[in-house]
Amino acid sequence: MSKRQNDKLLEALKQRPMTAGEIWKELGIARASARVLDLRREGHDIRSEPITVRTRDGEARVALYKFASPQQLLIPTTPGRGVMAA
Image (cartoon, rainbow, N blue to C red):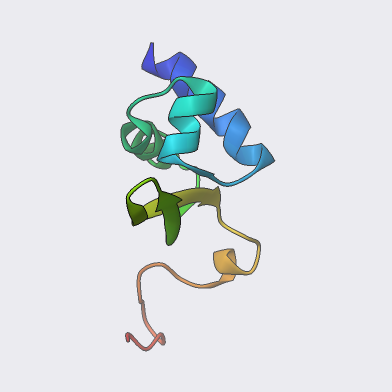
């Protein structure tokens, strides 16, 4: 089941960034973070960006899942030789 969900999520994220709520509502995938972790382990560079969304009770911080932009791919994710760590 999760393989099918992974494939469905991968295709959707290729189209546009999505939050866990959108993934649940549009794709029927309840555990978006688990599926994103599966995709990352398969080698897909999926980033999560914290955003604020409006809710019926005010606002909430959620993750927006998206593929890394070509510019982001030029930035090392782990510092190595010759790279200054922040």
